[in-house]
Every structure is written in C-alpha cells, then in structure tokens.
Image (cartoon, rainbow, N blue to C red; front, top):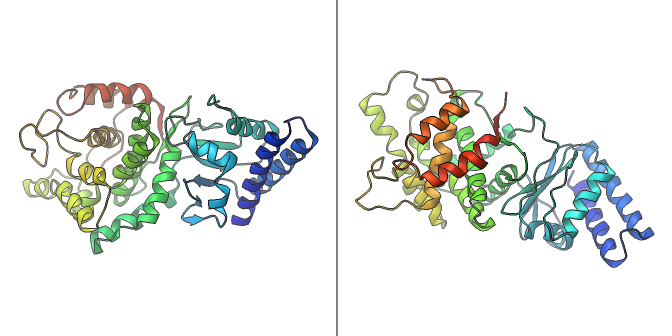
Length: 368
C-alpha cells in the first residue's frame, strides 16, 4: 500500500507542478493529470479509505511514515498543510472532477471548498476544507483507534511512559476528522462494550474539543495542542477500578471519592512521564472544576481555569450526556443542550457554549 500511496501522491505533486510550469490546458499538464488520476484510482481500488496525514516534516499512514514523505511535503502538499489541511483520504475511485478540485485547492489562495465524492480533504485548523461525500451513518471513527489510544494510555498507568510518536499520529488523525466547514459531520463513535468507555469517550472528546477550538478561530498549532490534551484528559482513570467505571448501581461515598481522584492522578501521571505539553497537564487537572468555583479538585479562591480546560470540559460533558451509560440512556441533542445551558456561567463559559452548539454540536452524529 505504501508504494501505491507514494506513487499517487508523487503523481499528484507532478500534476500540480506541471500546471505551474506550463498552463493547465497544456498537453504536458493534461498528461500529468491523467497519470495522477490513474495512480489515485489504483490506490483507491486496492486500498479504499487510505488516509495520508500531512505533518510538517513527514507523511504518516496510521503509525507508519511514508519513506519519502519528508521530501514530498513540499509544493502542492505543503500548500495544503500551510492552509490547515491535515489529511487526504482516498475512499473509492476518484473522478476527473475530484482531481480538478484538489488541484484547485493547491493552487488557489481563496480557500475553496470542493465537493469531492472520492477524495476527502480534512482540515486541522482555521482553513479546513470540508469532508465531502459524507454519508449519514458511515465514515465513523475506526475501531482500530480505540486500540491505538489504549496503547498510548495504558503504559502511562503502568510504567509512567508516554508513546509520544503514537500520540502525535493519533492527534493529527483526529484533528483531520473534526472539520468545521460546510455541512461536514463530526463522526462520533458509540460504545460496543462498557469496558471501552474511557477510550471511545476520549476519542469523541478529542474530536469535539478540536472542532470547538477551530470554531473559536484558534491557530492550527493551538487546535493541535488542545486535541492532544483532550486525548489525555481522562488518563487518571487508568488507575480507577473498572468495577467502578462500569457500575450500574448508585455510587457509594467511597466510589465517588475514588472517581474524583482521577484528575489529580492524571496530572501526576503526565508529570511523572515527563510530558512537556503544559496544557495537557492543566486539562487533566482542571476538566472537572467549575468556572464559577467548585467542582473537583476543589480550586483555591480566584482560581482561573485554562481556556483549554474549559473547551475540553464542554466536549466532555456533552459526549457523556449523549452516550448510553450503565445508569441511564443517552439524552437527545436538545435535552443535552438544555441541561448544559442551565449551568452557563456556573460550570461553563456561556460564550463557549454558544459557539459549541451553534457550530459543533449540531453537526455531530453517532454511529448506529
């Protein structure tokens, strides 16, 4: 697959460069475009759904870097990255219109939003291009992401070690899934088993947090950091007994006390692992505090929560309300909004809630 991907991206770059050297109507440019379409078609037929994540210095598929990805992150692909495009996904056999649209994205400075049926461009920042061809009920978070996140979080709990490369790759892919342009859906996953709760919920919260940060107009770097911090916000729960996480009966006082330790446990785990991202430590510690005072851990007077913690808190509560839990059914979107808006100014920043429900929540859809 990697060879086919390298050929396809190389052909796409060549098509872009030929249009710059000659004209889009020239025979050379036309031939390069045909070559690119043929390579993309071959890749899409053999490996539909292939997603190439565009990082500043490399291209990654899953956790594997493309051999010549560093060299290829120049020209048209670099222009996509500079404009906030985080990934290119090939779902099926692309069309001439798809190829023309992606080349137009490389060439234009006007941030066009192409309607692509077979190629998806995923935004990681302010200039994200919407995922096209989105079919309701399809295209949700791959189950493999749950296992990969578990591979990041579990070593933190057992050995105080953080798999930074895996975390960076997963962060970029989640940022690619949470676009904020057009009518693109934010594809949240449902639980298959209660034991998955921490990991599936965390993936959903990371995508919602990234989408909210984008909707606020934050820079791509800050969106990336907040998405990363959101993936680590509940890391302290690796030290919470599963029988408490999955308990169907009412919590005892002892259960509540154990559950409420996870923010402090999470911050300590991240510090012990040598995490350099201060915002991640802040989010792990603060995401259950209340903006108006209270919550847990109980903050000192005049404590001011980090804005990233407030973003993740909104996403965290929303996904919890919208998810079936052992002790209650999921709330409807309207009921979740009513519940959260009653706490505007107390738990949540009213302005954040307004942005979230106007630009993020309405575009969420859980997998059936």
